[in-house]
Image 1: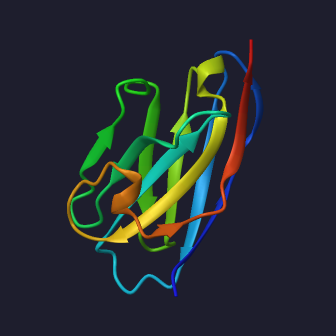
Image 2: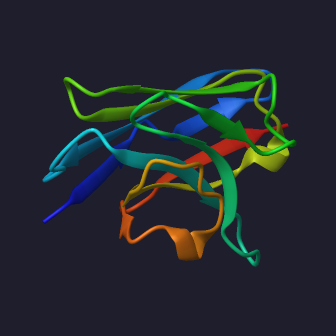
Length: 124
């Protein structure tokens, strides 16, 4: 059974940085596409970024391009999200997700494994 545990959230000022991590267990291979989504209060969960397992192909939401970087360490079964130049609108609960697939996937319905979420708060 796949389990995802997200960590690294916190409170940061505008312009600051945070690094999120998602520790995965139960993955049967590296052929999982993994992603970060976020959900702000009163809003739907939205796609942030994803990375494939085989070729490490990435995709980013326009709102985070140039500021966020997704990476993965297959040997450690860990997914990362480096967030720089954070803005108040980045405030949300951030979730990691995974799906056994080799292509880029960008909707919540595409993913069948989810972590518990970690809170990121950016103060102005």
